[in-house]
Amino acid sequence: MDDMQPLRMEGDPDEQGQTEHNPVNEGLTAEREPSEATTSDREPFEPPYPEREPLEPALVQTPPVDGWFDPTLLWIMVVGGLLVGSIVSFSQLNFGVNDGSRWNTVFYLVEHGTYEYLPDHDASEMIMRYRARVGPHPDRPWHIPPFYTIDMVGQQAEDGTWHYYSSKPPFLPTVLAGVVLLIQKLSFGTLEFNTNPFFFIRTTLILTQVIPLLIGLWLIRSHLPRLPNTPFVTHFSIATVMIGTYLTGWSVTLNNHIPAAWAVMFALHAAIRIVYDGRREWYWFTIAGFFAAFAACCDLPAGLLAVSLFVILLYKDRLLTLAAGLPAALVPTFVALLVNYLAIGSLLPAYADIHREGGLYDYPGSYWTEPRGIDALQEPKSVYLFNMMLGFRGFFSLNPVLLLCGVGIVSQLVRREALRRELALFTLVLTAAVVAVYVVTTNNYGGGSKGIRWLFWLIPFWLLFISDGVTLLARYKCARAVCYVLLAVSLVSIGDALRSPWGHPWIEQFYRAVGWITY
Image 1 (cartoon, rainbow, N blue to C red):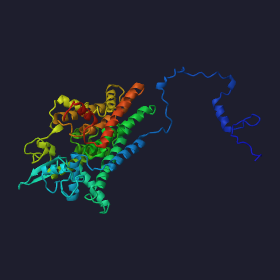
Image 2 (image 1 turned 45 degrees about the vertical axis):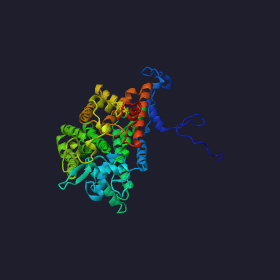
Image 3 (image 1 turned 180 degrees about the vertical axis):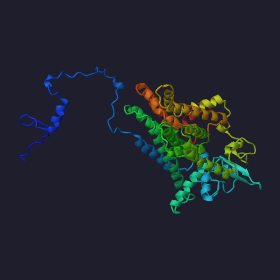
Image 4 (image 1 turned 120 degrees about the vertical axis):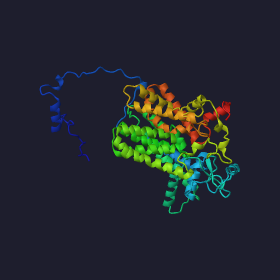
């Protein structure tokens, strides 16, 4: 052991202070040192630029090193676990008459192969049974399908008997029924919807709402500007996309707005690839066309997006749009029209008959012939618009973090170097058009729901600009505090919705408590 010498690297000085000969180092030295000058003859190094004044501590940003942590996957795991845990922990299978109506269609399709509510029952008797907390059928408890609902329509046959159906478009329940039947087949007959409704309803929600939504949110996050030197903007933007809007809270209950929203995300992702990235592979046009039409079949006003996107893609590449995009869009469109005709004998949705005397909503015991409460409102349209956007059901008041998205949209419109000015303008125009349609044609804020659910499918467009809005405010501490407050208020709404999306949001409950509204 005494004979061992310390490890010495090449080029280190030896015991006499001499450096070992290394031809590599010698060559490098010869290249960078002038042949006629020694180190002592060199002029002292002068920097070519004057030294900068140090930044204020509040503005200093530590540049990230390679491999800087991206929390997207972590957020997906957190949100996915939260949603799945919420779904499997609920003691009830439906939250109200709206999702109950859709589940009834799924139940009758799977168990009886029909869209009709069987056996035939009188609507007033159904209401009586619900108030007595028993189901539509004497031998079934009230909390498993078929559920009580007022969202149904009736048709009178020639023999005078009434036949009842869900008032909701049958496209989405048909898709869900297909998922349920597939699960039954894969279980080799060991699981049946009629005897295991808890398993099937929960599993179907996870497969058709939670998982696609998480994929869609990941796609939206992929289109946020990459800002490696601003971790606050990046982390805040990702948190907002993942958990800052009602898209998260509403994923725990069956509704048509979440499938429409994730379909919009898929279509929007493909459209950005085509319009901004210059991609011309046929499958991007197929994805854009199919999912834009799918969104419209789930949420009818999304037809504005489908038509607009068709025109835009037609302008970009006529051949690929007609050969790949249009045929893909016709698939869900054809299915939606077909199943609507099979259900109620018309290509038009049942909603078209809601105010017509002798129409589908006009049957003995119908709730809709004499609506009550919020469904009977006749407010001035100016008040209605205010409450939809900034009031007790407000798009912005309940999810105020979307105001930061609005700041980002405005910044894209006014900055000369903005890269997505057209998309920002399209978002504003599309939102204004959809809001105008609902202000003119409706009066009940979507019934008992937390948030103005009709606008949920527009949220992906707004989220694309969250980074732009936060970037403008990130350098000021007080502005960052405002961002935190807006996100915190939004999270209150999300937490309220996770408990039960169908009901009255917390701002509306406050309005009721202080007597500002009585309905």
